[in-house]
Length: 380
Image 1 (cartoon, rainbow, N blue to C red):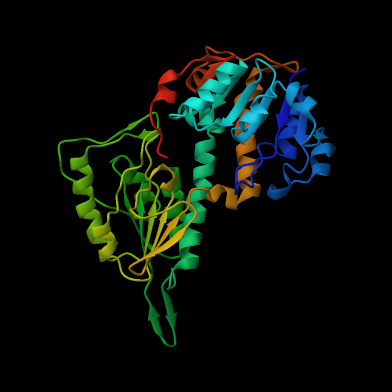
Image 2: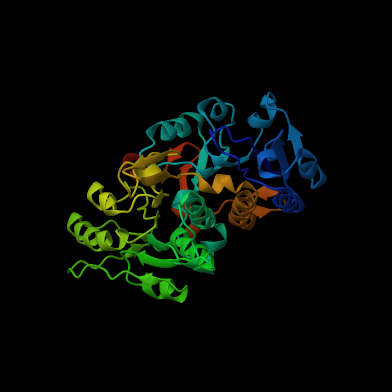
C-alpha cells in the first residue's frame, strides 16, 4: 500500500498545502494511505479534522516514522536538507523543486537515493493540462496582480460619470501574454480598464483581442519569436531593444504595468529599463511577477514596494500564496491528476516511459536523469 506524506511548508511566506481533504479522499479510494503533518492545511483553510474525516492520518512534527516510511511526498517547495535525510531510499518527491542550476539538490537526491519529479519541467502537451501546476498558479498570480495594482493606484480603474465630471478609465499595459498575462487582461477588463498587451509571440494576438484588449505591434525585424513546449523562447538583445522602444511610448501613457514575461530556466528579460521608468507618470504602478527570475523591470525586489521617482515598483513573486485556499485546491488536483494513472490497487507503478513522466522525472532512486537542468543557471 502506497503511503503519501503531506508536509507543512516551511518556506517563508508559503501558506499553500499540497493536498486538500478532497484529494485525500480520492487517494484513499485508490487504496492509499495519506499522512498529513499537523496543521499543514491550516493557513489554506483546511483543518486537521477535515483531513481525518476524509481518511487522512494526522502526524506530529516530531514523528520521524512518518517521514522514514513515506513512499511519495507531495510538496509545494522542496523539503529542507534535514527532512530529505529522513526519507527512505527510493522515496519519490513531487513538487516545485526549483532544479535549475540547483546542484545541492542533485547531490541530496544522489546521496539519499531519492526519486524526484520537478513540476516546473512538466511537458506542456494537451494530455498534461490537468497536471499543469505552473498554469494553475500563474492564473491566480495574474488575477491577484491586477487587484494589487488597483489597490495601490492613485485613481479608479473604470470610467465613471459623476456629478463632478467624467473619470477616465485607467490604462493598463500587460507584458507577456501567457496564462498569467491573459488572466491579468481579463481581470483588468472586468474592472473597466483599457488594456494593452505586448508579447513576442504573434500567435498571442488573437487571444488578447478576444478578451477585449489591444495587441501592441511587434518590432519589424527578421527574427520570428516563437515558443517551445508552451514557453516563450529567449530572443536577441536587438529584438529586446526594438521592443523597448515601442513599449516606452505605451508606458509613458500607462497607469499600470503588469510584468509576466518569463523564460523557463533562464533570467527574465528586462523589458522596462530606467529610461522607460522615467517616462512613466508619478503615481503609476508596476507589478513585476518575474522578479524572482531577475525581473522584467529594473529596480524591483522580491516582496518589496519601491518608489522610483514617484512610480511604485512592486516585486510580487509569490502571489498564489496570497490566495491559499484556491491555489492549494488547484495545485492538489494537479498532483492527483499526475499520479492517479500510476496507482494500481493502492500501489505505485510509475511508467518511466510515459511522455509526461519522462519530461519531469529528474532523479530515479538517486540516478540523475536530467543533468543539464542542474547545470544551467536559473533566474535567481
